[in-house]
Amino acid sequence: MPIPSPYSNCPRYCKLFVSDAAGYSESNSHDSPGVATVGFSEKGILIFAFRHFWSKEMITMNDYMGKNFGHKTAFLEIVGLLIPFLTVPHLVTNQHIVMKVDNLACYYGWINKNMAGDAYASIILRSIFLITCYLSCVLHVDHLPRMSTWEGRLTDRLSRSSSSLESDRQLIKSFNLCLLEFFISWLDKPTADWSLPVRLLEYVMNKVKL
Image (cartoon, rainbow, N blue to C red; front, side):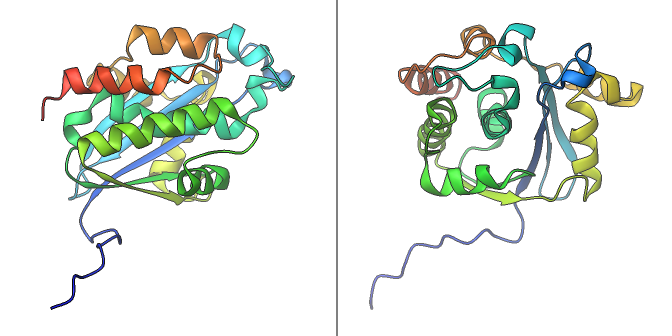
């Protein structure tokens, strides 16, 4: 019998994560933008919620090409895709994972495992790729039109402090998750450090022994 082609389609039952990120707005400079991700089990039960606020320094600084980080929407959104693999890697091991985001550049960036002209986004994409390979999981990135679903509206609210409801804040507190310190330091002042993906992989390898 011939060897069949590898199965690559997403199965009917899989874990779902939805992510959204907010950038810097000159009209609302006192607001705190950030990134938020929520996750659901195969039965649609909420099993994950996390958000991280960008540092004031990061969203107002420029990269080495002179582009303001607060306006690099693809980079900000891709960070949200990485967060579950760093905070709850045990939930995504040996599985198909669907991640929905409202930025089409993230979809094409994951297909290519690179984002042309953006070394910072490409570093995050490489980090996701290395970690998914180690965890033996298959990631399916899908485009979700902005505010088109309940979970999309939830992450949109969570991505800014001004739009978050009290129930949203309590939801985040209930999961009590945090990012590792050296990654937060990198997010506070991103650099084109191509050793970061390996360092993040080593962190996950120490956290999840396969």
